[in-house]
Image (cartoon, rainbow, N blue to C red; front, side, top):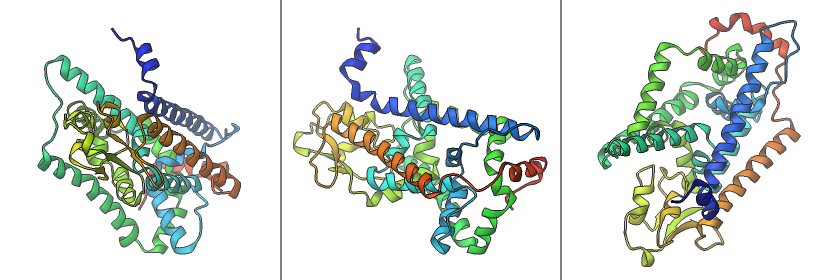
Length: 344
């Protein structure tokens, strides 16, 4: 019997991505705790506020997209939530360099979704059932959801709103405390929120990777951007025995053995198919390289993502595009009005 320790020793690169997910999940939890402490000090005017962690702005994608529009149109970098725009640009850059690897290596929501999906598969096997894998027609229909959601946000931000309205939103009191409103959304969830989250969790138990595969508009955006990436997953047809192992290992329902290059936007570069391939005919390939092994593919993505995020954040801090301009007193003045502040 292979123990978890022996499995880790003999196949360390199978666990590198999970270690990465765990590390970033821990960093997100730590950031959330710091932000919660910051929120508590805001409630007490006599308290000395702790530093607000700018990285919490990663959870304000709508504000970041509006800030991107403002920056492209006027050259003004959002002073309210600059870290949100910085992280959006870094994540978009990661899609260009490493396709949708952000989704399967860093995104905390992706990590939780994958864990719930794995749990669901384990439970279903124990009960003598299999996870439901939607057929091509169903999968295509479900996949439209995330693109329709993305289209809606793009239409509202870049078509329905003119640049004056976008700037007004970014400067409005609601956007100034959008991170606090987000915190309260999770601390004090409504009945509808609980029902929706419970339904999503149930769907993940039955349909692997349901949110990431079918509903996440952020993932849809990264999938579109990744189309210009020089990095791709390739297969050596002459060595492939068409055993179907790669297809069965893919949480996103792709069939790598039917493609010479896996360039579909659904691929999150988790490398599960590369890991499971008994003939080792799958691997990552980019400009100036041949097809890389699992070991080299894993380290290429891991080191590349760390360098990209580290360099981007260090540069943002050095140029003043990380820490927002809002003072604690400015934020505190809106605290009594939180319930009355809205986005419209």
